[in-house]
Structure formats: C-alpha cells, structure tokens
Image 1 (cartoon, rainbow, N blue to C red):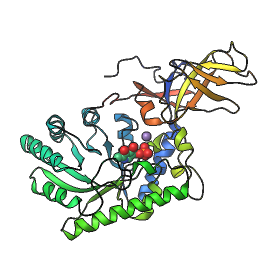
Image 2 (cartoon, rainbow, N blue to C red):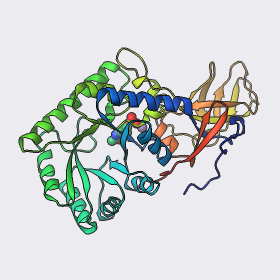
Image 3 (cartoon, helix red, strand yellow):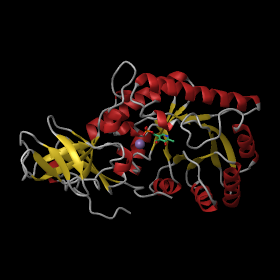
Image 4 (tube, protein in one colour):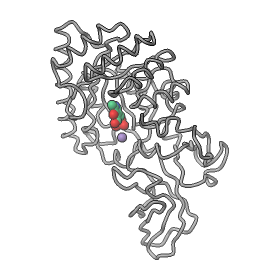
Length: 373
Ligand code: PLP
Ligand code: MN
C-alpha cells in the first residue's frame, strides 16, 4: 500500500502540488497512447505494453482499454501479484524466475488471470510444471532466446527445441512461443547502428523459429521490441507482440534517440516530469531546487530542464543545482524536469499526479512500487 499522503488531490491547481512530485501531463500521455494504438492497428501486431515502466494498475487499465494493448508485461512476480490484486487480467512475466516459491506464486495467480512467463532452462520448466500441477492451473510459457543482448536466453537456433518439448509435455504448461527482446539496442543513438542490431536480432529470431518449426512447434507469440526499436522490428517481420514500455512517458535518454529519417522514437513526446521548486537563489548565477537524486534516477544521466536557457548541473540527495546565468529564477519558482530514465524514477514515488493544463485531474498510486521479488 502506498504510504505517503498524495502530493495533491483531484481538482487542486498545479501550483498547490507538494514538490518534488511525479507529474503526468495527460494531454501528452494520451497522445502517446493514441499514437501507439494507431501503430498497432496499422501494423496488425499485438501490443503487450511493459508495466515495468509505470507499475500502475490505473495506467495498465488505460493501455488495455484505450491503448490497443492485449495485456501487459511485468518483470517480476511480485509486480504481477500487485497488478492482479488491483484487477489487471492478462500478464506476461517477460523474465526468467527461480525457485518453488515464485513458481507457486505464479501458478496461484493463474487462478485469477491469464499469466505467462519466460524460461531459458529445463530446471525452470520443471519448477513451473510442478507448481501448475500443484494448483491445477495453466501457464503460458515462452522460451527466451538471446537475440543479441547477451543477458538471458538460450542461443539462437536449435537450443530452444528441448525447452519447447519439455513445456509441451507438462500438462499445466502451454508452449506459447518465443521471447525475443533485444534490450541493449533500444538506446543506440545512431539510427543506422540501431537498425543493424535490430536486423541481427530478427535473423536470430528467424533461425530459432525455423529450428522449432522443423520439429513441429509453431510460435503463437514472438514477443520483443521496445520504444527504441518497435518501428524497426515491425518492419523486419519476426516479432508479433510488441513490449514497449517507455513510449507512454519518454525520458531524457530517449530524447537523444532518433528514428531513421529523423524524429523521436515512434513520434512520442515527453509526458513525465518531476515538478520541482526553487528553494534558494542566494548564490549569483545559480538556483537550487528541491529535486535531487532521491527524486529521480540518474543512471542514464542528469534530467533535462523543460525551460530555455537553464540547465540542471549537479544532484545531491535533496538539492538540485541549476545554472541560471541571468539570475531569472526566484525563490518559490516551479520548474519541470524530464528525468534521465523513466522506469527507475517512477519507482521512487508513491503516486502519480495526473495533470491537465493547470489542474490536477487524478492521483494514481504506483501500485507495484518496490516490488522486486
Ligand atoms: N521488454 C522487456 C523484456 C524489457 O526488459 C523492456 C525494458 O527494459 C521492455 C520490453 C521495454 O522497453 P522500453 O521501456 O525501452 O520500451
Ligand atoms: Mn528503461
């Protein structure tokens, strides 16, 4: 349960929001949701939006109701538990899980929702098979293939076959297809280099599909693609279920990424901001705001200030130093920061403050905040 009191209530003016606060600009957010819905409608692909970005049941519901999503992905079992508890009905854990306790938890969740999960080991299949037998439930299981990131997943080609066979042989497991996500290509800034990595991932996926097909296995789902690659991946024709997450919010890191031919990834715009307040202008040429490194993740660099001529220089725990060469800022002024990396930033907050223009329209809990198990 979120612990802190919300930074505002619906109907409050934006000027009354307690800072620092995690702000969703609803006009931009809804435009991103509509862009992705149009993309999946035109491409004929499915969207299974990644909920690791937002960890919010409200946003998952919006993605499924208005955004063209057939369901969502989670990265962790406890994240899936929190979202099912809040009413989300179709979740793929797009990750490997270990141990009986997690397998049992997923098998139990399958009593209340459609649940899928990934494997890259026979031990993983055995744990899931035992758990579904115990609970008399079904899980859809995807075999993860390493399509270039070198993180998890079996090698492309025939290595997927024994896993597919073991899944198909287990009464409570359904062989769902492949997980073919290439994480490291998403943030390659150079469009041509990103396209080359996407092409290599598609080739690895094709080789694996061919090896499975030769043994009589068809893949209903081939999951993959993120915000930095979904247009490329769709054109390459292997992935049929897009797992984009960051597209709803974007961040300063994704602002550096260009599509081939120019433009932002998928034409998406910034919809997530940290609202911060200037607390000191005592030192000439500088302003200090109340959003430091506890207010946003810095793993992908400093935030971008959503204001001309000002830049965020240094973050300490509770202070953000801003270069203000013309001394334009005054104590109490409010600014919007675009965080460097949206997903870990959202995990720092208990609530989203959803705003339209000058008014707070909704408060959404970060339902699965801190769910790391
Ligand atoms: N799918 C998987 C398996 C991921 O791990 C991630 C993010 O890391 C995504 C999809 C979504 O990527 P993005 O937020 O770049 O759209
Ligand atoms: Mn991310």
